[in-house]
Length: 80
Image 1 (cartoon, rainbow, N blue to C red):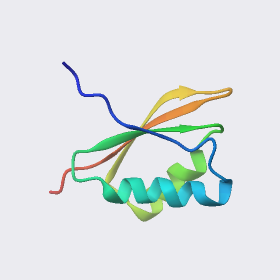
Image 2 (cartoon, rainbow, N blue to C red):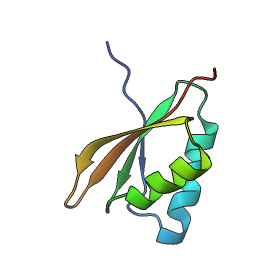
Image 3 (cartoon, rainbow, N blue to C red):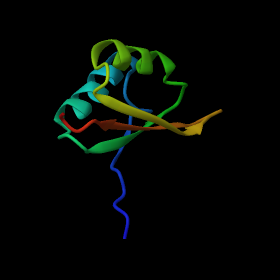
């Protein structure tokens, strides 16, 4: 049986709090853990923020790309 990644659905969250919740969820991950972000718009700016602040320490994989729902698989890379 394959483990299912937990989902973080931020569609009902006020926009000003979304990144805060997403980064708090990421920060609580241990190396090798992941989650699926569910959003109502393309999270490309979020990807750039991850790339700037967590270079080489995260994984990002598009699962669903709109037009109404976007899902992204985000993981924490195992420590080296």
